[in-house]
Image (tube, helix red, strand yellow):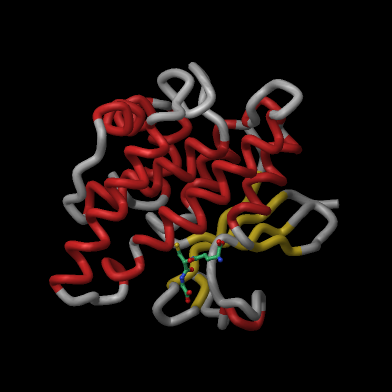
Length: 197
Ligand SMILES: N[C@@H](CCC(=O)N[C@@H](CS)C(=O)NCC(=O)O)C(=O)O
């Protein structure tokens, strides 16, 4: 059995998993991946490690690899229940939000990351804003599920950093969530390690 190991790219969606590991106080290793060249910081072709070629990829204590952010964040929330919403429907609600963030919100940024036309960028910004308005309507407190953040907030936080980067307007509760998240020790540590601050 060994430590968890996260393959990440600075500021990418893997930042959510990185934050989760730090918030949980986990012992883990990190390896940076250049997602343009698919090369790890040790000069290895990342596609020989994960055929999918994208981050996050989490190596579990028994050596298995887990990919797909919904699965990785769900795994971390199961391992560290303080990062999951409570209640009988907690797990289903968590998956509901993770799926929304992944398949609706994350996907909506594609034109911004992949050189969309002016028109596509404007439409993407509108979509991101509308999705965030929808999500903020269901917030139960400062964070999505109340006064403590869960892995879903970490994923959402990365999307809110991307919104800032691409000058997308976000509703006030989302701007507040982003500001609260930024103040957290684990978040600052993760962002500093990734060279984002
Ligand atoms: N389906 C994957 C997508 C992950 C993803 O889009 N990762 C991006 C960074 S945010 C990446 O590594 N892109 C590089 C590539 O696709 O080659 C998931 O949900 O985890």
